[in-house]
Amino acid sequence: MRGDAEFALDPHLAGDAHAIGDLELSRVLLMDDARFPWLVLVPRRAGLRELIDLDAATRQALMSEIDRCARVLHTLEHPDKLNIAALGNVVAQLHVHVIARRAHDIAWPRPVWGFGEREPYATGPLSVRLSTLRQALEIPGA
Amino acid sequence: MRGDAEFALDPHLAGDAHAIGDLELSRVLLMDDARFPWLVLVPRRAGLRELIDLDAATRQALMSEIDRCARVLHTLEHPDKLNIAALGNVVAQLHVHVIARRAHDIAWPRPVWGFGEREPYATGPLSVRLSTLRQALEIPGA
Image (cartoon, rainbow over the protein chains, first blue to last red):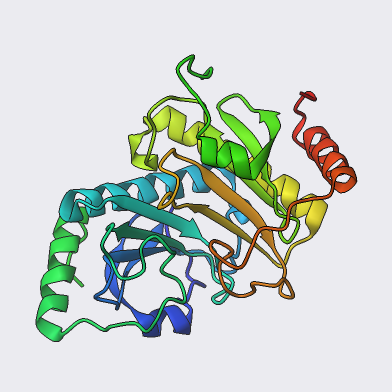
């Protein structure tokens, strides 16, 4: 269940998000958008595009990691709804969004993708958020 | 893993989609929108809202049924990308979208939710599509 030496994070994802750290299968990112508490899981295997590319064991492992990230966001953010999605229309590398939505957030009830412009975190709040998420996900600091 | 006698399909989903039939856990619907090949899975348990409401066994069962539906759409439609998502900002009952996207579809690369107006199927094509999907998913006809 270890990562793949050939794995490289898509440059578009790397540019839009900050690495929180690695779970057993997935790299976990924080989308650099202060409007929404928004994690992205990227299984560390080269060449994946679709959930149906995964064998059953890897699929189940990913589902467990999605569940873990969703529970952490739920505990930390008390959202009105979690949005969980594997889309990939823009970035082909398989990645799964886990987003805490609030009934008063700027995009509600619409999806967040393509909605307005990203609002990058300020340095201080970003550092606090990454640290809080690493602790909650039990990921060692980078 | 049987359904729940208290389960009732959300009226909004019932109004926007046609029942294909029931898998072990989920009711499978065809969204009545001829613009996109679009399935919706609804676990037949009362009161579910979030994926994190599921116990591990039910979560894994749902993931297997998502995989089954995604493979069927992939085989039948040869999409450029599958979109798989549990959102629920509008309909609270837990449901999972499995959508075959094409790089030339009307919404590409944007998500389909909230994009323009649904285009209901004509009766003939609807009947053919439901029949094809029941056969491919190995669900007995209603």
